[in-house]
Length: 193
Image 1 (cartoon, helix red, strand yellow):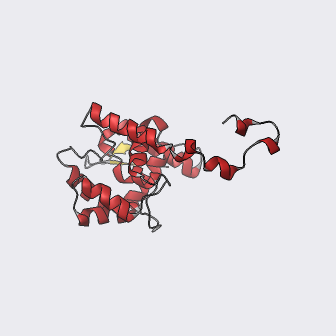
Image 2 (image 1 turned 45 degrees about the horizontal axis):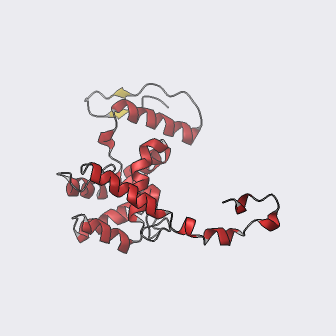
Image 3 (image 1 turned 45 degrees about the vertical axis):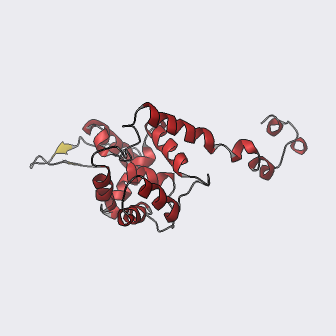
């Protein structure tokens, strides 16, 4: 680290050399240990829908895999706007799953992990396809957040604030009128954007 801070460029290591250091190559280890410690401290922990001990673990993930592309894209956008404190567990989970440390999960890697947690081959494959929103043939951190984000973990107020923030990110700051319950009492609608 000190060598990278050298004042003169000729005294600093090349970027390629820095990337090859054990300091960066082994960076995934502490995250894996932290995630494992989090699970040992409380077996009901995980992140979002990824709680293998949950009574409806399989059903909840199967339902997520069957959600529409539009719904999953909205979750992806919501996830991208979450505060880092709300994503800490997801980051640890992703680093734990990312055995190769390259920032992506292939279908083969993902299936191995998901099946080890007790899901079927069919559900594992459907979940991967649902997470691969743009047919990249891999999942990245944002895909994992979208797949495992548990909307029930947020209050209605928090979700409304996240939606307002999302609208502002897409359209820029503008007046967003209060979201109101629809007449049937089921869910929310934007009365005016």
